[in-house]
Length: 440
Image 1 (spheres, rainbow, N blue to C red):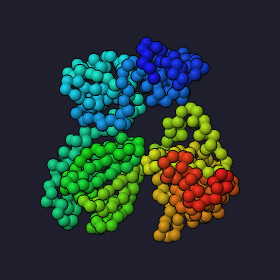
Image 2 (cartoon, one colour):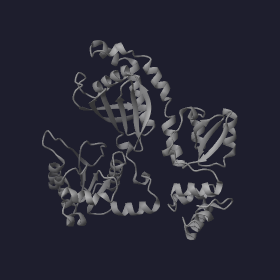
Image 3 (cartoon, rainbow, N blue to C red):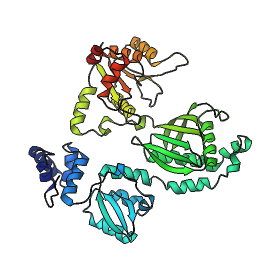
Image 4 (cartoon, one colour):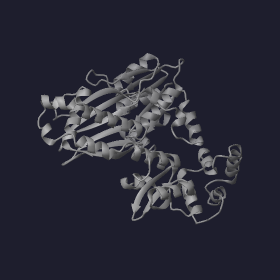
């Protein structure tokens, strides 16, 4: 894209073939009804351009470098220069300090008042780079959740190595004391504020790190000492109903807590590793956190297609993608949208992550012989209209689900693939007949 200055953004997008003249005209008509909105934001809202395309056009017009924040390591000393309120209000985040210059990522490099205020407050010269507004917002969420360094320093200072040599009455008393309880609650609050789906507590040779999965990616929040790690793990195992004396085999547990007036249901998993037990906590936020389908981030065109698909009376809808990509979130959003009193909706899940009023939800119990396949067979005798299977893991489950979808049921499920196209070959590799895949 050639550098072009002082060319209206709409004309620049048309000139580069990113939108049509008719789309520009439609956007300008919309702006006439809402003169306070920028044309770029309107084009985004209408789904005519992607955020990256818009940023690259602005880079060309304003001659300000565009950066992808997901590929950068934002420096903590830079972030500390600005208060969170200021960063959120102006949608800016400092990313790096070099000598007497701080680099600020912003979606509006023309906001000279804010830039001048930063120079006055910090004493640094300001260099601006262009970044997508949503990426800046996400970066602010991740880097301003808490002062993680201070939280880690405070808890590390309170536990000495000799205090955790054995699991005895002294340690049991230690894990019930205020510091470790408060620290665990702080981790839950951090996860809640950052909209994290998982907390990872991972032991290493000389330290442990705490990471959180936010929008599908893991971010390191802090590092803790081995003393804090063992005490924290023991505390988590107690409150989640696990055996604190057993460290040699994996364990699973659950716990419910109330943080900031919100009830959180958590699934806990521990596994022994070379340097101690690793804990992963999956946060389930309950029915109040199920997104409306309009909040899934689809543009207007894709939402129209999505809406048409989920209103089908039969067939199979598969959510595809790797771990943490939003399969379950999307699945529950659809269930909440299409289920009503005139429809019999039954699910078979492992585990039941969100409880929805008016839907029959069945929990898989392998020990009792209740698998996805056996549960699905039983569901078919319950006169269902909509069936949701938590995950297609094997040929038996896949075959029953697909045959159900071609006999008048709407079947929803998830499958672990890297993209939607791979789903076809994955089902064929499982041994599903091609004609069944095509029909469903």
